[in-house]
Image 1 (cartoon, rainbow, N blue to C red):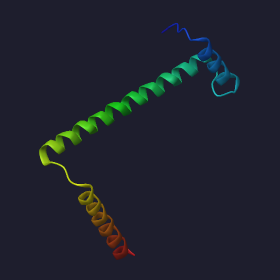
Image 2: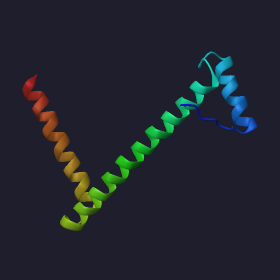
Image 3: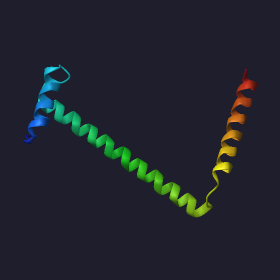
Length: 89
């Protein structure tokens, strides 16, 4: 598939520098890698937004807790994990 891409002079210079440094074999590889990074970032954003929606639904269903309650729960979980590790040792 042949697609022409027009880069700004600054991006063209950067892509050529990447090739000159030996990081890529040609400018097309630079562009493909950049697109993969963009694709990965979009996927991470989709996953993050899904998690936010799940948390919002959970809050709507179960309500919220204070920071003190959350910290106390974290302490309890850590204590249980430390006790379990001590029993295994």
